[in-house]
Length: 113
Image 1 (cartoon, rainbow, N blue to C red):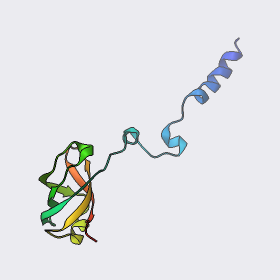
Image 2 (image 1 turned 30 degrees about the vertical axis):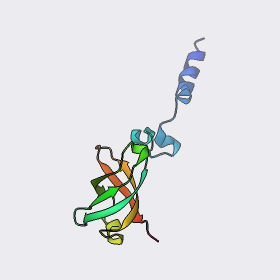
Image 3 (image 1 turned 180 degrees about the horizontal axis):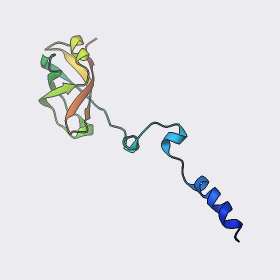
Image 4 (image 1 turned 90 degrees about the vertical axis):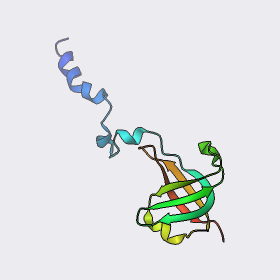
């Protein structure tokens, strides 16, 4: 028995799960949360503030959010997206709920072809 205990002590660390970094993953605890869902919408651009990265859109219902059609301001993830749209234009967009609870447009493109 006295020889068995030192051997078990050497093997015990092998029975523990490896840390994420040891398994080649650089993801932290945030990666274990579920992915952020993008909610598709369509609407009309009313106005934009490219410097502030904001757009005002009158959009139709967004069922995945439980929203009816309404007019609202959105922050855009990339201000460069606003260079491709203009007031009065029909757009298609994806919106997410950010970690701080705000709704953020992650993609916006012209809906007219």
